[in-house]
Image: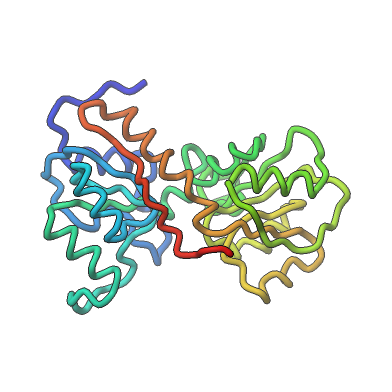
Length: 269
C-alpha cells in the first residue's frame, strides 16, 4: 500500500499520480485528457470522481466541499469560441471557474493501459482470465485499445449474456446472431468500440462486447463474431469507483467521493 503524502496536497501532485498510472502520451490524438480547469498549485481539499463533469456534477462537488473533479470523459473536447452559457459544456466550465473547482480528465490514456485500465476492470467483472490488449500499439505491448480474455469454462451464449446484464446492471442489450453453441473467448472495449470489430474477428473471439455500435456496423460482424452493445455509460460506470479507489489509496489526507449523479443521457422505457 502506498504511503500517504504529507499535507497539504497540491493539485499538481494529484495530476502527477494519475499520470503515473495512465501517462498522457498514451491518449488518442483526438482526446483532451489532463488538467482542463484549475491551477496546478491549488491545494486539494476533497475530490469528486465521475464519468461526466456536467454542471450538475460540479454543483454536487460544490455542495460536498470538493474543489477537484476527476472525470473519465473530458468535458471539453474541442475549442470553445464563446462563453454565454447556451451550451452544456460552456455552463460546466463557467461554473467550475466561478467556484474555483478544478476539472481533471483521464480518458483514453486510462482506456489504453492493461493494468488498472478501464477494460481490465470490465474484464474483471466478467471473470476473464489471461487478458491481453486487443489492438496493441506495438506487437506484444501492454498498451493499446480493447482487451481479450478467456472464460474459466465454456458457457452457453444466452447464459453468459444474462450474466453480462447482471454484471453491468442493465435490463437489456443489443446483440447480433449467436454463432456458436458455447463461448470461451471474449473481446471487449469500454465506451465506443465499433473501430475494433475487425480486431475482434481477427482474434477469434466468440463475443465482442462494447457500445455505440451503429446499425450498419453490426453487419461488419460478417457471421464471424457475435457483437453485444451494452451501452456507453453502462460499460464505464464502474470507472467512477475505480478512480476513487486509486486516489483514496494514495492520498489519505483528503476525502475522495463518488458522484451520486447518474449522468447517462440515454433513458429506457
